Image 1 (cartoon, helix red, strand yellow):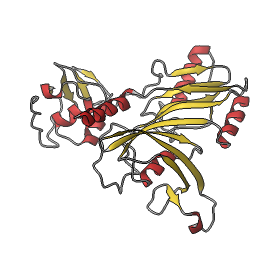
Image 2: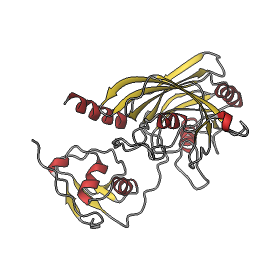
Image 3: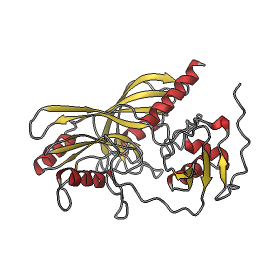
Length: 326
């Protein structure tokens, strides 16, 4: 047996400014898990403390909840610490293709594709514009067209356009559902391989986006046909790794379809109200846009880009596989 986990303090008893050594039992754990144990707070509070710059590891503020704590590390909680300024640069290797017409980017989880409101900064489109300005020495605001987006907590491939020709072409391809979009996801329970075909509305009756029977609608206006093809890749303890191929691309389509089938995504905090099983802990929504393919607007040749499973998803997958082997 390994060393016992330390007794947790009473929630809310964290003392600001006190340097605390990380117990040996927590070496190698994610930072949010360490903060939760050491400070005796909830998962949401622990995650919030890290992301808002209130936690320092060995005296250095760390906002990455997935950082692994090492032997000898100390943790300091500073209650009145200022929120760090949002990043404006893209992570190294984020741009996987750029030419005069399109830019294909690996979006990290945790940033919006475009601003949610006029006050949001550090978004993906803003960072791509800054990259283009630096790389090509463009003055002013570089031209950048938005033809699709993925959720803030979703990671993976996004394409932006740089010319009117590209925007017209890709807008039409997305409208015709000819763009290849392949996602990987970790979900609760054990779904079956198959296809979901429903009509989505903004409010299915409980305040959430969801599916409705068309014959119950007074008018089909406001509903959108949504088709998702699901393939189960691997069954895990209380979970599964699935591949989702979109035939249509509606807002929250994958999340809604899997949730309504009784298999919400790991890390889901919206479409999980009625799930009765044991919930998997995940630092964010376990959904990743792993393939993106389209006809290049200039060359008219099909192009396909791929992005492997990110580290945080890989970590949860390995944890689940380890449980399966026991």
